Length: 291
Image (cartoon, rainbow, N blue to C red; front, side, top):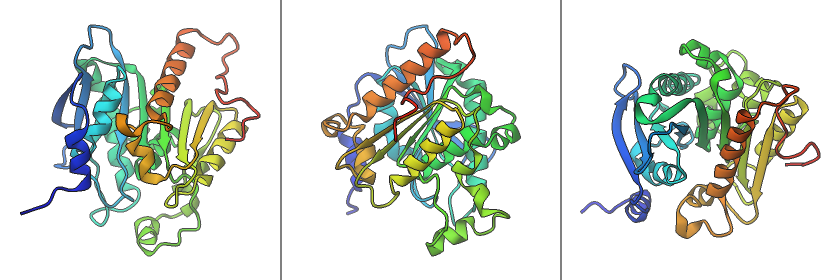
């Protein structure tokens, strides 16, 4: 008898109320170009903000069906949530998974209106390697341009425990994944920061031993120096996986990941609704916040 995986148990006990899901939606021509879309069960007629959530797994593992608990949790915040698959190592290497992420994002921007989403309010988000994908799309416009879209359309970016500044690459498998790049510096999200970056929320756990919280601090500092809007949260006593599990109601006490995401999105939407008279994005963390 095959024993259930831990993530299967998480999905089994995750709340099922209040959401609907459309599975196996094609966003591109390849068999792996599929995504699931989560919606509030009582969405009404108003178009809702959209989150595209990229899962982690060190660019080597993961499947969209494993993250039903995340998609449903975000949908219960009143969001439309797309969870795409993307190709993984060893089948592909950098930057192929980024091209998949860009293709999925471009599809969502173009088609999410059919599912109740507002194409003008699309946020890219992810955990771990998925946060890398989200921030690369938000900071390096070439990927969305190549997919027929524009990073300027993005309303914001949300990174949970992401590797944004991880040179030199020391692990053998990561050298194989990224070693073919003509310029390793360009593989890093932090290398693409400019003042046109969309509003960004960076979340990390202070006890993360897999992706050091220094990644969050260094990217936040670079964004602020460029004049971009960035907010950070580093949760005491929280590790790499616990940060993601905090999206489950029983594990959210003391780690308000969902609340911080909801407040960030609400703040961005409110700022977009009330035009800044001088055309500058506010720094939601404050210029002197060290991240």
